[in-house]
Amino acid sequence: MQSNINVWKKIFFTIWTGQAISLLTSSIVQFAIIWYLTYKTNSALVLSIATLVGFLPQGILGAFIGVYIDRYDRRKIMIISDMCIAMVGLVLVIVSSLGELPVWLIMAVLFIRSIATAFHSPAIQAITPLIVPEDKLTKCAGYSQTLQSLSYLISPALASAIYAVWSLNYIIFIDVIGAIIAVMALLSVKIPEIEKPQILKKPQLIEEAKEGLRVLQKQRGLFNLMIIGSLYMCVYMPINALFPLMSISYFGGTAWHAGIVEIAFAGGMLSGGILLSIWGGMKNKIHTIVASILLMGISLAIAGVIPNTGFIVFVILCVLMGLSGPFYSGVVMVIFQEKIKPEYLGRVFSLSSSLMMLAMPLGLAVSGAFADII
Image (cartoon, rainbow, N blue to C red; front, top):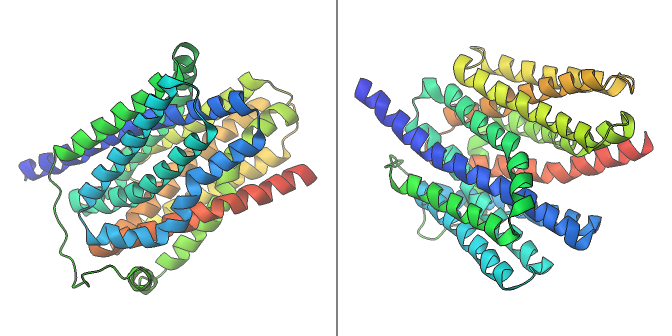
């Protein structure tokens, strides 16, 4: 029994160590590219387009990519995705070492990276229940949320420090190394294969995608939970976009104050991930999700009515907002992993991710309009 425990832990932490390193290096490069585009073009339109090509492929393709994730070896899909990220990064390294990087090439690379991520993210979510015992899924979700939060917390500081002393091609090469490390971690472990149902030789994208939707609808409440998640993203995503506006325009702060707010939010997420990995949340997972949404909603409501002298209160509220995040996203993911058969998880996670990605621009547009009017 002890041997079995050690085996799944070794596989899980080997994979997630590689993924954590790759996530950190990708975050560093993402910040560096944003700064590069800002200094090179000084154009809000260019930054908006870069953001769009960075997530729109995931939103559009997500509903169909799950068909391939459920058909083929998920570990190989993750390896190919990481290698694609490494290869396009290497192209940027070579071009930037020869001269100035053209904006169109950066956009193309962001587009390809987004497609690779659209395959990678649901694949790793679908792999987890094949490795981890069901009663440990929530705590493992806490571990993964902690690693992601830690990356979000330290990557801006690392990116700014590295960007000040290194040229962009060296920074991008860090991401190439991170992707290779993630691939090596995946190659070093063996993941159990799922027993797949009878499927046609050639993928029938529309029909098989619909099958994933039908499986989701058969599980009581899961389809509604996915819709709620999409609506939640409409509120959740604009928060980071409005933080600098709140810090500087409303509270009369500087870039230093905006940085404190970002660190407070990321620190809250990190604390939430650690707490989830230790505690595991309430016995009733829906109660944990409701408590998370309430904490987020109450914190946002208070943040909306405090006077412009209440910056310290705002920072504390940002910690609470960040703290609520893992108890929503981590627990929702576990519910899907527990309730959906492994052979359908790729389609379910891809569809869910697609809806949330498409909800993001809607939330940003609505919040931006309200911010300008109110």
